[in-house]
Length: 179
Image (cartoon, rainbow, N blue to C red; front, side):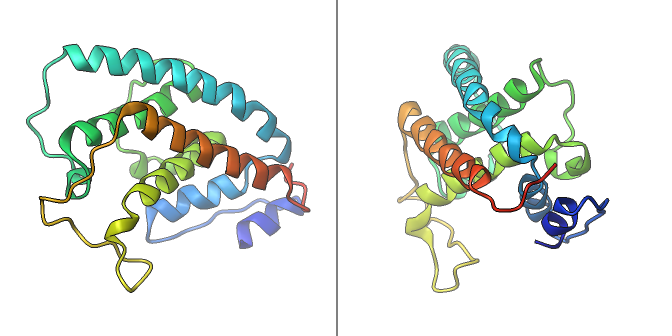
């Protein structure tokens, strides 16, 4: 909130947080107000990339490394989610990604529109794993293994699209103008 208000007043900001996810949220909140108009086109590009990469992944060998998302998602669904995540980065940068450095290690270089789309990814995941919500809303229980979630690609992408649309609406309806 502090960063958002400062930037809306034309000040330069340098923010810090222990949680790298919150740094992405802060970058998303400081997205230029008029940038919201470009996001639907990006979502279309993400859809095309997601479709293409999903088909390629179906034919390629499976990774032997266990993904942390498999605490809640079936392995195939975790792969679909990672493909969606990769599709966001490819679509925003309009090229194949060349870095293997995780996003939390390069938050300061992440374009604000990509940060907003990452927030849509966070919200998408949170929506589907809500059954693992604990009494503390900031904590999420880990699956016992038998109750991990399986989702078809279309349902996963449609939820992402819904979350992106909600964020676009929020950015567009802001009273403060972010330059």
